[in-house]
Amino acid sequence: MKLVIEVKRRRMSVTQGEADVYVNGQKVITFGDKIEMIKEGERCYGENIGGWGSKKPDSAFIAGYLWHPHDELYSYREKLERILTDGEELEALGADNEKEAR
Image 1 (cartoon, helix red, strand yellow):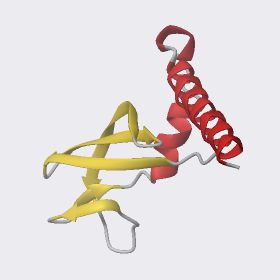
Image 2 (cartoon, rainbow, N blue to C red):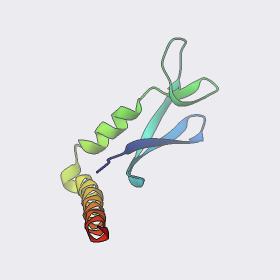
Image 3 (cartoon, rainbow, N blue to C red):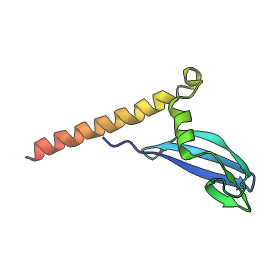
């Protein structure tokens, strides 16, 4: 099984942004992305528009999803479990099909 977690950033304006977290191509959560003035020598993640960008790396959003402090209320992990289970079921079907083909 392959697990791919990625972050796609969106900018609504120079100073407003969001970061969507996807697991195996399925969007699981959206976070606000704080857009700040980037000073010389500071690292910028995502797009830098007119000296404004995010100082938060993708890993922070991924960790925020995996270890969300309010998971007991929002059940974000359940979405991950469903994605993983669907993948296992698909793998099992593929393995059965390979056996039948032999």
